[in-house]
View 1 (cartoon, one colour):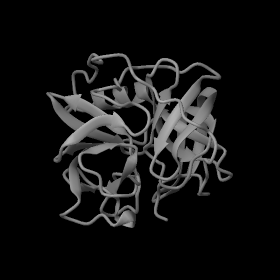
View 2 (cartoon, one colour):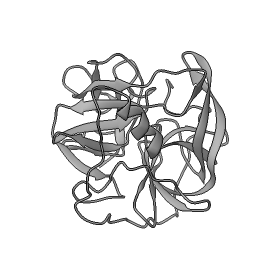
View 3 (tube, rainbow, N blue to C red):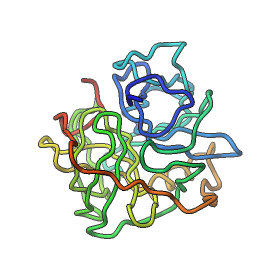
View 4 (spheres, rainbow, N blue to C red):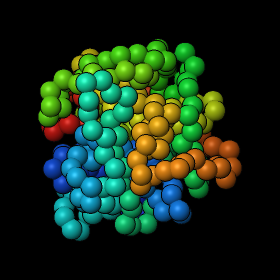
Length: 249
């Protein structure tokens, strides 16, 4: 299956986006009251609460209403300094709760306030560059990201990773290779494509717990230990992009 194809049931690591965005990545799922919610970036799910989310994204042929898979439930608003670029959408189609090529099985990712170690190996599953491997080079850093509608936006307390990525990978889940914990979601990368930045799972959790719709808590037990697929590195490729990945092409 190509990650840009129409996929039912939907899984993490494939093309998606709001109707006004070209295409980004469906990162993973969180669950509330036994309902699945898609998680990605605000600039991938750009719009207002209730707007449709398409899979695949419009750049990859997604159309309304045939390819509507979710309705936007939460979107972060940008301030002078930010810790998240976050969109949450309630699924309206069946989901298969896995991240493509990383976590086969049921409910393998738990949203917990996990802090990655310096030098930790990570896996990323994205629309454009698929499965790739990286290494944490900063546990908490600041970065100014260009390409947003509002211009350049400052982020703090984000994770820096040496690893390949490309335009359309925004929203990709980033997983610790040893623990299987969700580190967070890729939201931007350097112009040379050698480093990407990740909003932390703990800051995602903090943002959602401040929202009346999502309180009091999102965490739940993982049914069994994560099963990680160790990738073969040969043949990975990079499509160059700007500082903010997954924005309009």
